[in-house]
Image (cartoon, rainbow, N blue to C red; front, side, top):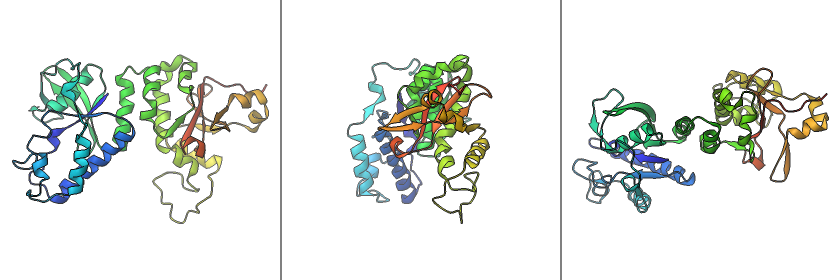
Length: 333
């Protein structure tokens, strides 16, 4: 899987110094995030030589003689990033059709864009890839003479997550592709070791529940931490918290209502489940030498198929814990 920098987006002719520095700064912040996540970025052969500001290439644009005079710090950061950079043209296996670089992006007329074309042809071949843009993130239809594809133009964490959720589909939409990509698609969930191998324990198998499972993981990742920790009486993240007392835990009823607001049915187990040893132990897991009782559960269906979870904790890196996935864990007598 590869991110490719869309060099065509680095056309700063007519742009202000502030715009250029803000755009490049946001790009480098995203590159830092991808570096932490160990996600690979590549560029085209012409990235450092193409015209970016009038007749100036990248390094001419950042020279002391350039107008406007741009930040020396940004130049140093760009140099540090580009020093060990990889070029997608050096890949041993090129996607089929890469010689076709005339491509339509959205409703625009076809243009010569090898960077976007590379990603387009990768996707047509079932290989996950995305473009890094400087503008707002988007998902756009692309078309060449050989066919169509939907390309993710990413910048920032939210678009990165959405891309990885699509990678699950691109790579087969199977239990294996979900397990392989879940840590990147749902980075704010703590998956207990081995739990994703239990997807086929769901009644009907994973494929019968895949849409519900992925939707549940997305809500738990994006909003689970807020749902479990935001003080009451706020029920949606879009309400004002002005005057809300900090340090107050939400009740079970508030938590359930918040989840329902996102279309997810989540409930705690009844007290008798804890009191029944076999049932309790089936819902327990150990993280960093601490035992967690995952009594909150997502109801994928009314009477079966559950994802058992625990609120964020220090041992999980303050992530919602996904502890068990099963058709139904044991219940008392």
